[in-house]
Length: 374
Image (cartoon, rainbow, N blue to C red; front, top):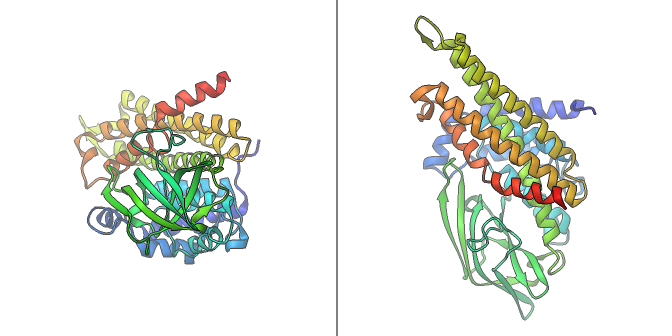
């Protein structure tokens, strides 16, 4: 099987890598995440207008390039290597996939705005009562004349504080449905409780108390949203796995370089055989993670059971590798590893958070076991 990138995909990787290496400063992004708006809107506009990556994996009829899972993998890995906090996975991969599959007069213009960089869209699917089971939906959507009324709560809606629109899962008479909420003027009945996550990203818990929506806020057919939501969750999981690979490549490279420079007992610590063995173990974990990501990416458009099994295998592998590489890199850096001044500590936080996004490591181990038995 050929795992080489096409010439166009190599150009995409190299162009984005050059942009991030010259324009994306870690210190500046951390400052924006901790004390500012949570991201850098000018970088987002650069993604749209200078690089075109926001439309790289979206269809041509909405202004995109018409790429696919491999393009998403390339972009997500580069963003992970730079530790970018901009909501690419949440907006383009997850919300973009949901909107594309839904289609219609509301979804199509919103997709065009995503490609242009003028819309940021967040999915609100998780609920406190259902844990990691997104199919257990307590939020309700009731018909109200020619519109809808939403009631319920969502938790940990990633990128919601940055969003212009929300995609909300709710249970209507026919089953699980998906609704779009314009945050520019939703009126009464919605309250966001934003916060900063451990890895310096933005999320929110959301309360819906009689939020009135127009009839065309329903995306797709009523009660038929779950297959698309399940696909979007797997697509998001595969994308954050790719992002984690970028993070781990950077962490391993920095750790090896530090081991060459840090001296103890008159020689570089990298010359000690025990530490060399640790770094080899880190490299082996990374290579297994890369192979697992390829498995997920190559099966992301397969039938649901095959797709889910491949994604769960990748997410479980990534969870183990992210934990091992992150912890070993911090330990090999000594007490400096968790300081704000060193990049390693920031990457470690992100690698820790990745283990729980779109389903925890334990969740995906259990799902893989179930899918393998059946």
